[in-house]
Amino acid sequence: MTALFIPLAIGPWQIVLIVLVVLLLFGGRKIPELMRGLGSGIKEFKDASKDENEETKHVEDKK
View 1 (cartoon, rainbow, N blue to C red):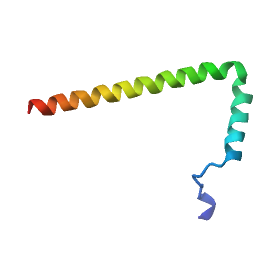
View 2 (spheres, helix red, strand yellow):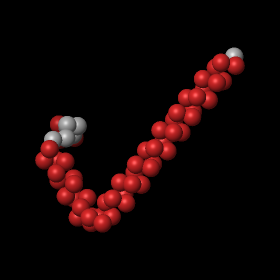
View 3 (cartoon, helix red, strand yellow):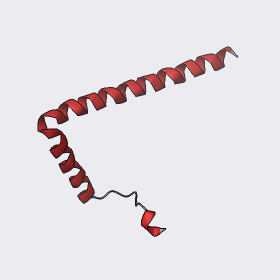
């Protein structure tokens, strides 16, 4: 059962390994495009979450 235990702590060597794998898979030219897309997706998610909170407050104020 202990073989199924996966530690959640990520150290610096694991981060370096992940970066190297991403570089090998996508290449240096694709990474800025991927990060730009990720950033815009996060921004849209935050905006939608903010809009939802404002709508919820507006509905609660009407009650």
